[in-house]
Image (cartoon, rainbow, N blue to C red; front, top):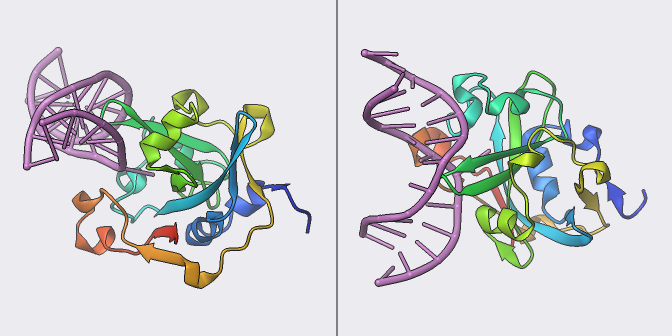
Length: 170
DNA sequence: TAAGTGATCTCT
DNA sequence: GAGATCACTTAA
């Protein structure tokens, strides 16, 4: 097991909740800087009413149905870019929203600070595209990771909005 | 607490 | 084509 390991497709192909949990403590790399991921949310499968994919495939969410390890970046509220990494097997729509890193809290602040916009959408997480994720050997113990309901998804109804699919490092 | 902002989706 | 919605942030 090497340090500074760039996460590949095989990592992101795992079940979405596993990927979400394990992304906490990994490092987002951008413009020569490395940021430890501290907050993520899982969006998993067709049935997840909080997920863009719950009403089927569209032009926007197409990448969620594709291969794991690609970026899903979309604009919300007319001004905020949201950064997600596609997870799970092909044809299964799932992704993990990266909501915060050490020093930058909030998904829109994150993309703004790291100059990430929709031009990254559908691209691979790899050095070739200038945005990727590394395992730098940091292990965050279970008792330091808090699970809470996802933010801003009340429209999905109680069953889905209350699922504890948000992972935050304390 | 509410406005800002515009792409996307769901009807006509 | 029109209207509603929205995985948020900031200023008040």
